[in-house]
Image (tube, rainbow, N blue to C red):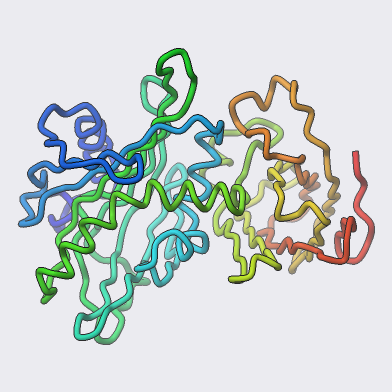
Length: 350
């Protein structure tokens, strides 16, 4: 396995894992196990030669959440605390390449079982058929990685999501696939391993439950001018936090290495979390930022297939970059009612 080889480079690991993931998605070696709550569960021998099999769950959904909306929840560490009971948090150690992140994450321990930590490379890409894919894979070390006391470092062969457009019996929908190949390492009772194996593929269902209950999390829809390198490389730390009562939502966003004397527009889809208004707090940014809320026109072609009917509109930030600087800000839901504020000033509604 590449992640276990000390001299393997990040580009090598990424390329090999993309190849592996594409092969696993179409592999005939999966053995169907059972279906639980509409999620089809299958097993196969670990491609990393781990003792546990690789496990996969997939299901077909017709409620028109888009690929990007699914991904916004699947790869958001704050949302994951809601849809994955074992997840304890994650930290981005480095943003590299075209949207690749080095992430240190923690899985909760249980009783006499130590918590597990993972040091992974994560990336997303579009497949040949327009499938949107996202995966994480273990890497060997990082200069910002510090092992947590009492935690066991697990080895992740791959954990991947794939969102594919399909038509079944004349009905358009989305096939969602999630697979995990992991070596837990250290002591774990066989009974707990069985529970984990049973719960893992059900993440397809729990992510869908999150989407149905809360809507999507914030994600970068587009930038102007269109610059795919910027979209993937420079936007980091876009996270959404919500409390357990779903009363308050907070989105944290960070954009790094802005180009000097440039203009930039950032579109962030809004959903029911901000239906009563929002406020934006600008943090440590000297350049000019104008904010407006643009109501979503359902027939607007440029956003076709990118957002679903649950989208109310877009929070648009127009940035005039003079000095080279990083941009960091927070968007908070405002339960005061129909108030859209930026640094205390009313935001223009279009």
